[in-house]
Length: 233
Image 1: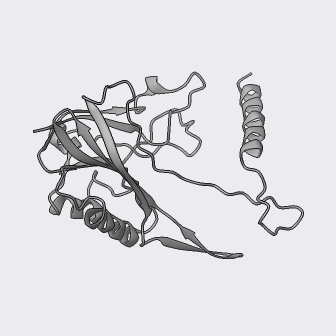
Image 2: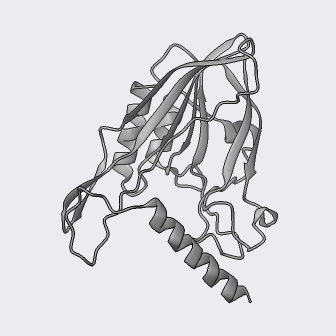
């Protein structure tokens, strides 16, 4: 029964994917191929239930990194783009800039350069800064990735280390299909970094415990989520 259920789920997923990813009209292809375009977004979600006297946001910005990986393929060179997004937030009497990003996973040099672009770009502001990102830069276990170390040496605080310095806090990665029965998280790469007069009060992982799995035994994601309560002083 479990196999039949998975088979039916797979067929349904395939039909759903075919409806989402239509052939592109501008793609020249052989008759037995389908051309698929896939877009990966960075987003910031803002609560809508708080009045403007409590929470306001402005100045939304986003951009691709200049330093990226290029993939050689039979149809030519394909750029593997990565990006960042930011907003300025006014929470009660405190202002700060929130940045979200997803750094390169396959090339440590490019990843480090992208981190530098964040620091000299959207994070170059007189406001306190909060960066929440899948950094792909190993903070734990040792050895630590240069991209992570360069944030720390630039004065950024790692919210996890502020609260739980003796806890591994691994966030990556479950199996590709998220169906592994035992957690395979082995490194901490999903980070909340702060710069300026910000204190981390609490922090926790979500989706990392076996009880978080779906009824079908799937993990919520290949990564564990990280959430923190931060106080601007």
